[in-house]
Length: 210
Ligand SMILES: Nc1nc2c(ncn2[C@@H]2O[C@H](COP(=O)(O)OP(=O)(O)OP(=O)(O)O)[C@@H](O)[C@H]2O)c(=O)[nH]1
Ligand SMILES: [Mg+2]
Image 1 (cartoon, rainbow, N blue to C red):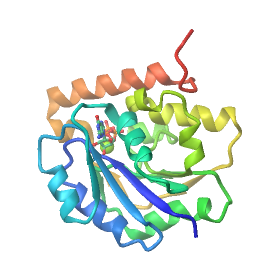
Image 2 (cartoon, protein in one colour):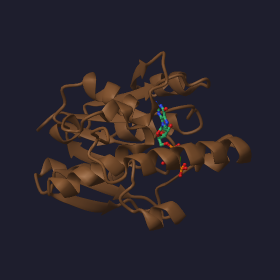
Image 3 (cartoon, rainbow, N blue to C red):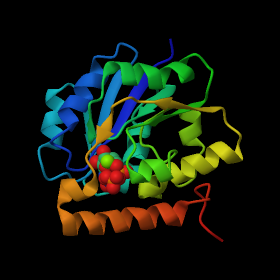
Image 4 (tube, protein in one colour):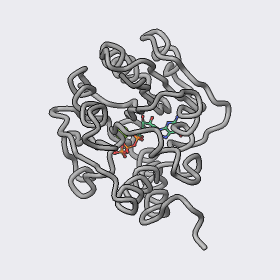
């Protein structure tokens, strides 16, 4: 069996990270659970450690893409599972379902679809829940700079290189939206910032615009 590492970027996710890590750790297919926190000011790191994750703490905030790049650099696993740290209702079955098509070789990347909110309905492929071969991530130039644009860049990469991709329905899995996490004003600003990063990287393969 190829080695599997889960990389979970988490920025101030103390409410949910413990349960997310616990569910992934219970899946026998996963060898290493890596939580990457870059400047969380709450108990994210402690909760992740207490539930058995290997935690990478970065002193500088590198954004979502930067956190994933740091996680990738810390493992040799051939299969990478990407999960958000703010999931609610993640089960071991969700993890198995995401990994199965990549482990069997049926797909190079699987994209998990969580319970749909407006964003999920409009952009079903912009999901933080994926399993993929590590070469797919390694082939992305500037992965560390993509921030919230990482999913847009990955979607572009899948199309451009005609990778075998499949979607996996993840039942009742949901997450805590930014407005609920941060309150209206801070949440709205964070949402605008994320939308800007997604727009900036949409239709791009990770290279700087010329
Ligand atoms: N380490 C790290 N993780 C981050 C950073 N920004 C976002 N994340 C994590 O990436 C995951 C997705 O971020 P969210 O803010 O939930 O974004 P989203 O679910 O795509 O968008 P919303 O629907 O607006 O909530 C979560 O686990 C975040 O904690 C960051 O700067 N550093
Ligand atoms: Mg979220």
